[in-house]
Amino acid sequence: MTEILIQGGRIITAVDDYRADILIKDGRIDTIAREIHSDTATVHDASNLFVLPGGVDVHTHMEFPLGSAETCDTFETGTRSAAFGGTTTIIDFALQKKGETPKQTLDQRLAVAQPKACVDYSFHLILTHITPQTLAELPDLINRDGISSFKMFMAYPGVLMVEDADIFRSMRTVGNHGGMINLHAENGGVIQVLIEEALAQGNTSPKYHSLTRPRIMEAEATHRAIRLAELAEIPVYIVHLSAKEALDAVVEARDRGIEAYAETCPHYLFLTIEEYDRPGFEAAKFVMTPPLREADCQHALWRGLKFDDLQIVSTDHCPFCFNENPFGINRSKQLGRDNFEQIPNGAPGVELRIPLLFDGGVLTHRLSLNRFVQLTATAPAKMFGLFPRKGTIAVGSDADIILFDPQKSHIISASTHHSNVDYSLYEGRSVTGKVEKVFLRGKLIVDGDQWYGTPGSGQFLRRSASGRV
Ligand code: URP
Ligand code: ZN
Ligand code: ZN
Image (cartoon, rainbow, N blue to C red; front, side, top):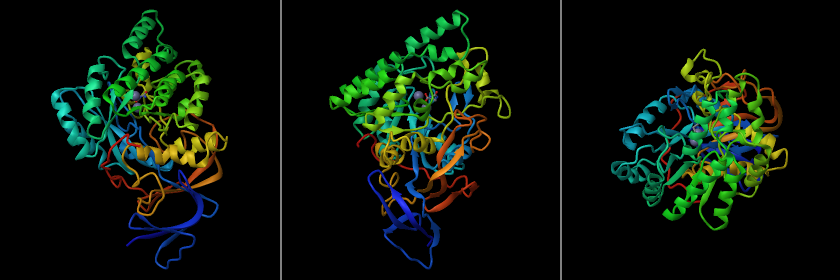
């Protein structure tokens, strides 16, 4: 039996903050006590360190196809990068292609991830073709395969967008069996008109990505998504919420007792629309959907995190290199050099969520330490059917643990991160708070700059119900 003893650390969960030792046996937390002594365990000294539950990032896109493009992190490089940032569980996406049943989609995605994943993982299944057969398969997917959440797009007409009627049908089927629909909420039809107008006027630069995706069209779709869920009488989850007006729609619904939930992402908390004024094609690095917003949205998002109008911070890690080499044009922003609509949408960040939120949230007193843990580990695990196996430090839980130095500063740079992507949204930014050691089910996988994880050692997680928090 493998035994690990973490001694002298300050354990922080979503509700607790205390000093104790942790004994891990066979990958699970066996004992938590004031002082534990063992002759057989490997000891890790955690004095002066925080002991946090491993992060749960419920929005990543590893080797993910998006039109003719594909993200530049494989499951191996992307999950290694996640681990260096303290994330030990991801929920990625499996995209239903034309003619595929959801079960076929899941099986294919599993085959890609299984040999490579270095942290534990699951998928949200992206539903793009709603047929009676699709709907008939969903109950088994939820209750047998443990896929209890499904993403649907209200944007990208002709590519990923689905009609309201299909969203409503899916909500009813999924909701009645313990699942939840996650919505990409932007009014795709109207945005398409704006894109076509911009291009017709010769406006092809990356800035027009932002100018053609207005805040109120995110708000409109968010409101519509919530109303559909209200009628279907099931919970709903809005992904990558960025606009104040969209948050207002969530707040209004929650005040009425509707089970509307939402996540935001670090880039909306730390960056603004001004990034699109960068010269030349540089602004393409910041082309993600929804786009970066004005500073008033940031204030609203921080407030939403504090008062639980927003429940989760995920990364929407969707990395495309800036340069064509070495991974090719299809993994690069250069696809849209002459036309902003062709720039692959997405930005990197899986390694930075925990350090950024600690530095810019806890140290600035916007968030308490407990809330920080709740937003990055506990709430995502609860929302998506992984708790209490994941998301906390408790006897019986998986020993996914971070030893975190709250005083150590470091400079964010693409030259030192572990993703394949060749830039960072935060290049040169100094942050205080550093992930020192990471344990995945009791196995040390990160120790300072050293990597001890192995591709394929991440486990697929069958999840229980989503949205029942
Ligand atoms: O720009 C983004 N967010 N790309 C990833 C796909 C999505 O919509 O989440
Ligand atoms: Zn999306
Ligand atoms: Zn995404």
